[in-house]
Every structure is written in C-alpha cells, then in structure tokens.
Length: 180
Image (cartoon, one colour):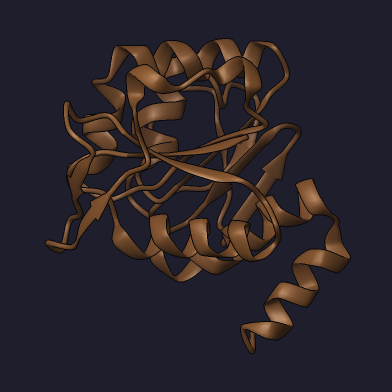
C-alpha cells in the first residue's frame, strides 16, 4: 500500500500527477485526508475527495508515504502530529518516504528525516542549519528518501517513485504512454 497525504492548501499538480503516475505504473495508492472530512481543498481551489481519513491509515502496511507541497498545505501537514510521528517511525524502519516542493523543507527537515542526506525543495525554502545537503536537481534520491523541487518536477517525481517500486522499465513505459 502507498499513501499520499492531502491537507488543505496542497499543490494540486504535485499531488494529482504523482498519484496518476503511480497508479498508471500499477501501484495501489490511497489518498489520505488529514482533515476531519474526506474533502480537501488545494492551493488553487481544486477540491479532492480522499479515499480515507488519517485515522484509517496503517503505515505498517505501507511501502511509500508521500507528501505533496503547496502552501499552506505543507505547513498543515507539518502540524499533523499523527502524520509526523508516522513519517519518523516509517523512516526509522527503513520505509520509503517522499516529499516535493515545500514539504521537504517544511515537514521532513524539521523532523530530522533529511539529516546528512542530499535533497531538493522549492527554491528559497531551504531550511538553514538542519544538516541537509540541498541540491539543485529536479528530483533527488538518497537511500529511502525521494524529494522533488516543485510543480514542474511532479511527473519526474512520480516516475522516480514508480521506478523504485515497479522497476525502471515500467516507469519508462508509463512515461512513453504519457508522451513524456
């Protein structure tokens, strides 16, 4: 199982393109609302109905925990204690985690999930003094952690996750099918 977490203010293209690519690659993806209801509103007013609420998530069964960016979406994700605890525990157990845009800096870095790692985030959001080796690439993989730069990296972010789970050939086939 793979979970993508939605908070009000999420960046729509980052969230939905990632989910779309993962599903095209044959991955089972569940959309999770951290809100008290399934409906979540993106940074640009797009409303999404998630599959489950945060309280329904069992990370013990998860391969990936994925965070889109967007503001105030990333801030809202960072304020969700059940999610932050889940991310730390999943990472400590060697589980795969991914974040794009503001979320690497706003959620992952303060939790210590990027300490000593290469990572990328939306330009100008790099957290200072947090032990992260900030890069300029569109997508960066360091061990079990994938980070993406922003909206333009959304498909590449999804392809990277798919390649790590389903193999490079599968990810490339999905990309060809999407004319990328």
